[in-house]
Length: 364
Image (cartoon, rainbow, N blue to C red):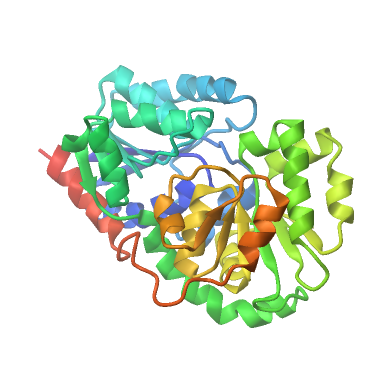
């Protein structure tokens, strides 16, 4: 088969790393990078450290509003996917980004089958562009590759059960590969940065709903300042979007001046994993980081009032606090659950199952 894989941001690079290797062993994959994340810290370093094949086509379509960015992606992807010499048998998309939606819309218009990895996830919050993107993509796709039984049940309620195949979570494949390396290097790597394992918090923030509105951004800064302290610093790898909004809305200086807050440049997958596995807890608005924290056995405080990964909340490793400083502090004060963590997200072989599902549905 000829597969066109369309990716554009950090979580998609991680997921594609689990699939591209087994896919290319038996099929022809063309990797198209939209450039949704286009700086080195959020793009090229992931290809290097995760051994992901270099993109066959690399666009530069980052920036702008969701609608403006998606429209540019559609315009650029159409001739690439319509080219008779390289027209794919299937377009493979991941997750819930503007890249995901643009790839699905172009494929649907051209009559090319769509396979959606991480299908069926729902926050049930249509205010989030990610929720709109994933719902539309699922309803356009011909193969829905779901990571959890919860995702399957969501698709059943929407009448899409016949298209769903539970393959497990492809991010687990990569996490199970990277986390042991991160643990081995953690003590020395952290010491060079004046950090102690278990003695700091890790934070990430980039969702439009948290950083684009001045009131929400100010509340986010309040939470981060409340959680940080000299005895337990908070390390925040600063997403370019968040950095720009902090400057734009006059919150940058307040956050940088707070005791215990350490703003650092974005980090690659191995460095991020090293911070994560050694952290006392993580505060995030990212869906992917919620999963990574669970797989690492690190408490997660989610800076939203909904989540796609409800299983992590149900087993007690994740708490939803929105942007409430006291709720965040209360969550961080709770002991982590005792006993073993259930294997919610698969056994590390999801990439192989994705390839098998593609072959069963589309080959021949």
